[in-house]
Image 1: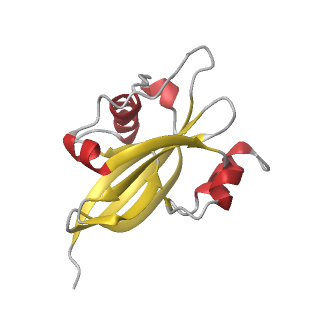
Image 2: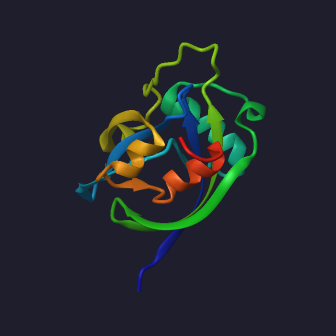
Length: 156
């Protein structure tokens, strides 16, 4: 019987001016050959709201510092189960849609990564919906292209 560690998380669909989404590429330290792309975000601190967690994670993982009003309301939620570091997690996560402010000359800054992130993440890039639909790479959530098309109002 699998024992799951419950976890609450906030994730960010960070879009640039061309409607491309930022994804990180990483792997599970217990399964280094299992590589995948995923959105910025992570587990909530005790007592932290999802929007506060999304703003904090965005600052830590990308260097983009926004207030909670700029992060907004969640646009999607899911429950996912996954292994990481030899443990199984059941994660309830809310997703926030954030656009990089047009006035910023923004470059991703991963200096805020914690040790686990430094050890397990090796790349980041901006993906169009079409690129996600055409890739053979693994990404999570698997519904990401359809979700982005819905949020962006159709064809992109």
